[in-house]
Length: 142
Image (cartoon, rainbow, N blue to C red; front, top):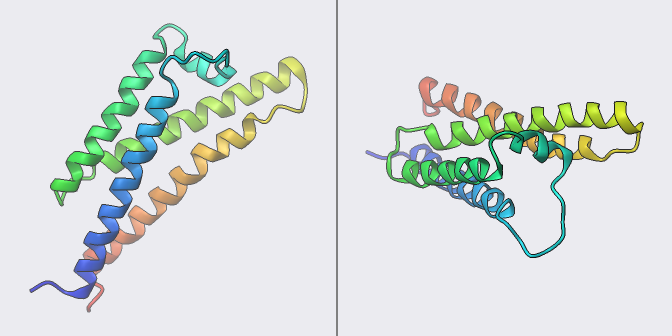
């Protein structure tokens, strides 16, 4: 028998995974070559140094694939876990880049904002996963 709590959990999981897939897809598409003259930020140059930006396009694409896969496998958390890992990686990279920018050019860089754009959602998602996981084990209907 399916309870209302189980239905809400499944619906919330689907919304979360679909949103995660769309977010990762937007990241992958953002780093594809474009015709504009926009330069990559210092943080992206830091990430791309040695490997090339295509590695990160593929990595974000893998997150998309894992999130879509997890939509059909109700017990897997690979998609959302890989998204959180990528958010943390990019957040740390932007923090390092920000510190380097401040040292090289002084205050005024806005990379701290981009750091929080990645690190903030990573913390929020991780905290929600821990909370939902504990509720699932405890049993909301108890």
